[in-house]
Image (cartoon, rainbow, N blue to C red; front, side, top):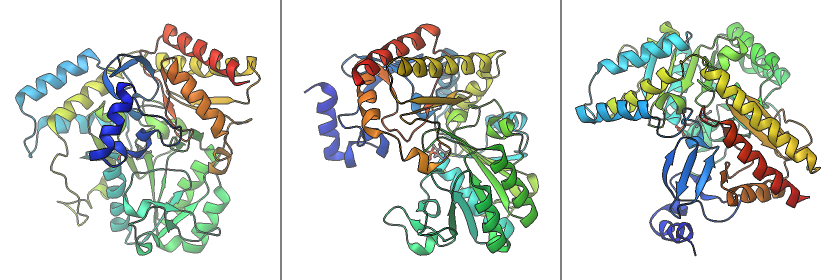
Length: 426
Ligand SMILES: *Cc1c(COP(=O)(O)O)cnc(C)c1O
């Protein structure tokens, strides 16, 4: 048994499944998760001292690579002044102003500590603002684990969803309508039938929690039009896509202005910061000015905010996104070519600095397509790469991430390892 296996066994005694978030447990690929000791740049080292090229990057936040020196310096300086005050600080104004500058649709911003909280709060706000009950979400999109969003599609089209987790009463999800991603006609039909009681539509404009699936512009723009027509709010969940698919996020990529936006992951730069925000007139309904209650002991934590601010500063350096997108493209092109050389049914896609790898003949456009992935081949690929020191997400239903310090050398090492694994898979 190696140290990872030992620790995994020990962990399962005091932590359910040995992990503090389910996908970390390697359930779908098998084996023991790697227990990480430290990380730097594009690399992480486990407790055995083995080095991995990291394409998970804490599920997106480490866009600068691990342990960026400027970020660490600001975090240390903030920590020295105090870990938490439970009251207002100037840094909170600075990060709100910075977010507004980068994402202009967010005229006002409320900080929270996780994407889950951002989603839960945005939905409460949408319901409070519109005085309506129903919400629309899409199959395969993830917006955190709050009750009303843990829902799977009903048995027919245009039926309300059933809880996808035990512990969620059906009465909590009875107002959540689950529709197909990239199906504008279905959205149109749903508004025709329920429009006067729809509070909001929530969407990942580039989906990253069912592998990577791009929305079609038609889907996004139909959503915007219908929300405006029926007085519902459009919530774009940019927890993953924010500062990732473009500096201004998916809304900049598609040229759409949502009513509310959720941010997370990159805005904390690896520490717990998330946010929701949008039109001033809507945000004025949040407590203490409005009647929609929302609060948090550690919201706007000074150390976490320092980390976020330093990260937001670094990503605005000239050429940052050209480098990030260029390196992501090289990875995707390299892996695609390596699979082709070995006649493996495989394709890959990227939007900005996030990517999808698919054991499918064509790039998927929705959840049903992704479900057809060859999971057996994925698992072989995943473990082959892990053995060779390349760390991809341990599930075919997750997007991957590149940082700005994934250099040509790092990408080449990855592609060479993949060529080797694909050759053994034929
Ligand atoms: C990660 C994620 C969330 C949840 O954020 P947490 O910080 O894990 O609660 C919500 N929405 C999307 C799109 C995400 O990728």
